[in-house]
Image (cartoon, rainbow, N blue to C red; front, side, top):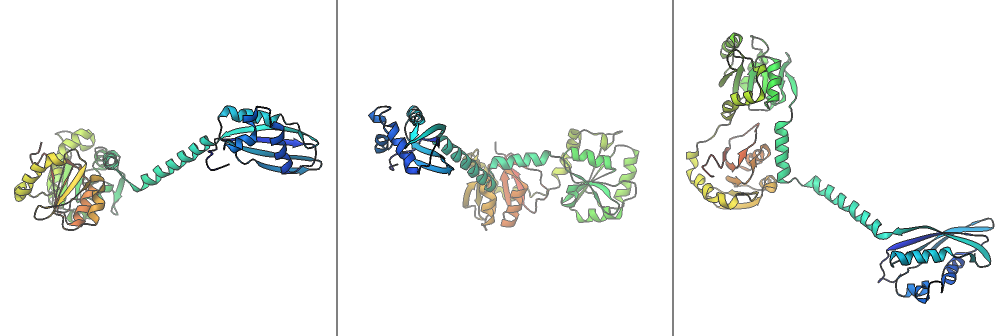
Length: 376
C-alpha cells in the first residue's frame, strides 16, 4: 500500500481448493473473480490505486490433491466497504480449473489493536514514573499512615521485657509497669514504652535509661505505683513522672486519655532554642509567609538571610543532598523525620513549617511552626 494509505482493517479469508495451485493463482482469482461485481469503483485494482487496499498476502499449504490456506487483505476504507469486499471474495468458487471455497475468518480493527498497544504502553509509563517519584501528597499520606499503623510489640534484654519497637531507636523512652501497659501505649501511638515488670529494676533497663536523653515514668494511680516510683527514683534518672488518674491503671486508659496525659511530656523531649535567639529570622518569616503559603514550595536562606534556592517541597530532600551552606529553611508543608534527617546532614539549623510530624530524632535543629512564630 502506498505510504499515503492508513490501514484500518485486516480482512482475513480462508480458502479450500480441490487441486494443486500456487499463491499467484489465489491472488489472480481474488482480483479476477471480484472484478465488476460491485461496480468499477469497487474493483480491487482501483482501490489499490487510490490507497484503499494494500498488498494482499497469501499463505498456501498443499495436502495430497488439495490446497488450503489464508489470505489477508489490508484496507483503509470504512467498515461497510470492507464487508462488501469480504462478501465478494466469499463468492469465488473457482481457482483455475478447480472448485474452491472462500470463507471469511474475520475482520480485524487495526485501530483497536493500536489503542490497546497505546494503553498498555501508557500503563507501563505510569508505573515507571510511580517508582521514581513521590509527590508531596504521597509523603503526607505516608506520614499519616505511619502515625496510625500499629507498631509491633517486642522484647528487650535477657529478661525479655515487653516493649515497643521504638525503644531501640528513640531518643526518649517511657517506663511503664507491665506488658498490658506497653500494649495500651502502642494503641495510642507510642512505640517507645518498656515494661519494668516488677518492683525490682532490671540492669538492662538501668543501662537503657543511661543511654537515652530523656526518660519518662508513666505509672498507675495507686499505692503500687507509689512504691515503684520510689524504686525508680533511687535507681535511674527520671526526667518526668506522669501518673494515671487516682485509682486507675495505665492499661485501663483510653488512647485519648494517654495522649492527653503524655502530650506535655512528649513536647518537652525535643529541646528548642528560644525564639528570642533568632528575632531577625522570625520577623523575616512573618513577612515572607504570604509569599510562600499554599505554594507547596520550600525556600532556603544562608547565614546572611539571603535566599539560596526555592524548590517544590516534593524535591526538597533531594535538593538538600547536594547543597551546603543553607542555615534557615521555610516550607509550605510538614516537617517530617525524613526532612529533619536531610537538614541535619546539610547543616541546616532552623526549620519552619505548618506542623511537625511525630519525630524519633530531632538532632540539634530548631523546629518551629508558623503559629509559634505568630504567623496567622
